Structures are given as C-alpha cells and as structure tokens.
Length: 453
Image 1 (tube, rainbow, N blue to C red):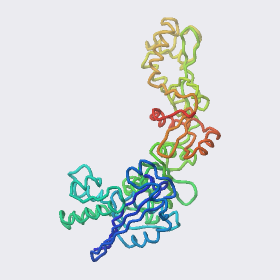
Image 2 (image 1 turned 180 degrees about the horizontal axis):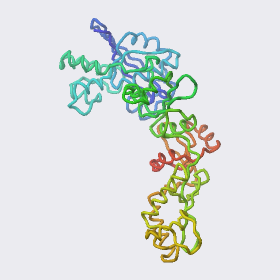
Image 3 (image 1 turned 120 degrees about the vertical axis):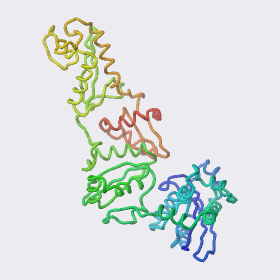
Image 4 (image 1 turned 180 degrees about the vertical axis):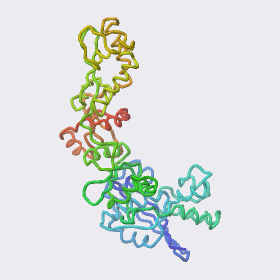
C-alpha cells in the first residue's frame, strides 16, 4: 500500500486565493499500516468572520498566538510529501495548501483523491455524499465536526469502511476512473493540471506571441480548460487551438457574473482570433421613436454610442448594423400592416400611397385612409417585444459577488472592485462605450443591483 495522507483544513472562507487557513489536520498512514496524527492551529493573518467562528468553533482569540502558515509550512510539507493526498472535496483543501505554499515561493504538488467522488462512484444509489451523510450512512464516529483533525479522522474511517464493504476490484475501478490523466497537448507542462483552479473565472490561451488566441469563461476553470483538449478530436477548431496553444493564463473571479463580464471586456479589448461571438461592434444601433405630432410616432435609427441610456430613453432592439435593424423593421411592417412611408422604409411625395398600400398590406395611413393614432398604436404593439429594459437608477449601481463589487452605470460595465479605493477609481475613470453583450447579461440580473449612494 502506498503512503497516504488524510487531510482536512479549516479556513476563513471559501476562496483559496483570498482566504486563509486557520487549522490543519492530517492523518498519515504508512505503507506498513502505521498511523500518525497531526493537528495545528494557524494564525491566518486576517480576521475570521463571525459565521466561520460559529461553524468551526475556531475563534480569533484561539489563533491569536498560533504560528503563521510560514512557520508550519516545513512541518506540513514533511507530512504530505510522497503521499496520496486524500480529502473530502479534495480540490478545496488541495487548492488552499497550494496557494499558501505559493505565497512562500514553494510549489506544492501531490496526487489527489477526492472521497466525495469516490463515494459517488461506489454508492451511486445515494444522492448526498457530504461528510454528514457519510457519518450517518456508514456509522462513522464523529468527535468534533468542523475541526480539522476530527474531520480528517472521519475521512480515514470512511476509507477503512469501504475496504470492508466493497471488493478490491470495485475500489480499484473507482480510483482508476477518478485518477484518469486528462489529455493535454504535448507542448504544455503536465503540471498545469494541478495548477488550474476549480472556481469561476476567465482563461486565456496563448500561442507564440503576447496576444491571446482564445478567451473563455467558466464556472470551473479547470474542468472547462481540460474539456477543450478532451474533445479536440471532435472539432476542427478545437484541434487547431490545441495545436497552437503554448501557454494558458487565467483570472479567477468571485462568481459567474464577474466571469461573464470579464470575458466580454477582454475579448473586445484583445480581439482573439478564435473568438467569434463577443467581438467589438462599433456599428451597434437601436430604434427610438420620434414624436412628429398629431399622434404620429416615427422610428429613428441611432447608434447605441449616441444614446444616454441613463436618461431612460425608450429604445427598441440592439442591432449589429443598420442593415439588420432595417430588416427587422421591414418584417414588423409586414406582420403588423404598417405603412412603409410612415416607418421610413420608403420615401414618397406627400399624399402618395406607399408600396405596401398598393399590395393591400398597409391600411392607408399614408393617404389618410387610417388615422395616424391608430397606425401608431399598431407600431407600438409591433415594437413592444423589442423594447430594451430602461436603466432603473438615477446613477451607478453595484452587483455584489462575495468580496467583489461590479460597478454598472446606464448598462455600461465600468469594472470590478474589491475595496472602496478601487471602487472610487472606477467611478473617476472614463466610461466605456455601451456594449450589447454586457447589456444582455446585466438586464438578467437587474434584480441584484443596488444603487450606489
């Protein structure tokens, strides 16, 4: 049997790049079956939030005189090195340790086994596989839940239990499936698999130069990046990308909204050759309605860059260019029997019938056979489905995702801040142009916005 390390950590939060470790618990199992245990409180160098104190029972007072991670890093490495790293939701614990070592300039890598995935593979008939469910299902003995060593002991108990309840072949098959090596292009460092985070964010594929080939977003960066290469045989584009990529970078975000906004902004700024959907569009336009008097509203096409969406102007549709906007208007005119002259689709002398009237599509508003008010009513009905959501605030607003705040003003994404100073800097910076993709994303989340005082 290879040496094992059953690991559990307590932390100040859930984000490995921002939060810190407060306690380490390790159960070491040697090849000969001998067992050793180690538990260590760690001063995180930051405050432990009250709800974390309540959950774990580890208070700020308890860690005040504890050593920092830097002071215990050598001991932790000695106990983990050369062992299979086993944890429940292992990417969490592994990610925190990797980041703590990285802050010290040390690279930590180990083969990893997740007992959540192992439980799912061996007991697929059950829906829940958290540690509390395993305690109840397998009769594990819990001394102090949410303390590092106690939870590490529970993971070890689960490992011992499955050795009794399942055959060696079943366990080996489950382990083999979990530890199957992801397929990476040969020119990439295999250690990249361990470095990729499993949280939300944006990833950038680079070739031979400094401009990215492709930018993508993901709820799970690691899973999404690896999926590109796992399926490169099925798509010519993916195959071409796999052959060209030489380096991969990523930017972690607090949530999916931040990842989507960051992706859209980066694609428009850097114009990667493999991105098709989110390209910058300087011809973006929208319809507004101009009051010509006597009940007549006339559609007028304007560039989105010329509209102040903060004024709650009624706008209808967002189009890549004037041609697309006029195609939509022509289709609406046909469906709702609108006049080609009054909608601006056709120019004619006053009193002359439009082409639509001659083919019995227009109801005759162009020659007085229908009142302008009735025509306008039908026009408003036709445009109703195209109407954009009006900016609901008098000024900028925030969408919060954990420790990040996305600053929005008149549907323009101004940037993301983690402090009041960063937020103020964003408010003082020049506003970016209106962007269709940002609007579509933000309109879905308007209910989460809070006006900025």
